[in-house]
Image (cartoon, rainbow, N blue to C red):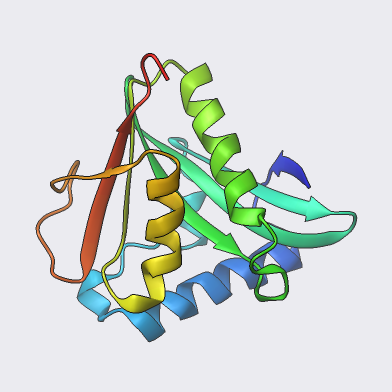
Length: 154
């Protein structure tokens, strides 16, 4: 899989982000959806990557800089046609390596607490993410789970 920084203008990427947002709306109440739209993903504190196998888009993910030492994983999504092929694992590994390269000491994320998000929670836990309190601008929400990992020494 080739991972590259993406400007979110290609049709395949737009469709995958739409699929991601639609999935969030199917699994979570509106007040608990923290997925970002196109314009938000294009903001200067966010780097967005797409993953490709040849000319086929297989997944995406983003890294948001919260401050000089703390990043947040955003918009992790595997294309429906490529589930259970290791796409998310490769994208997560890429994002963690980039966070380390930037000198972040911590990497955090928010995901859903519903059953639909169980595979994501297992993936993050397998990389060493631990459950934590809400961070940044998040607040307690029964539909959200917060996870974090320290990167120094990792």
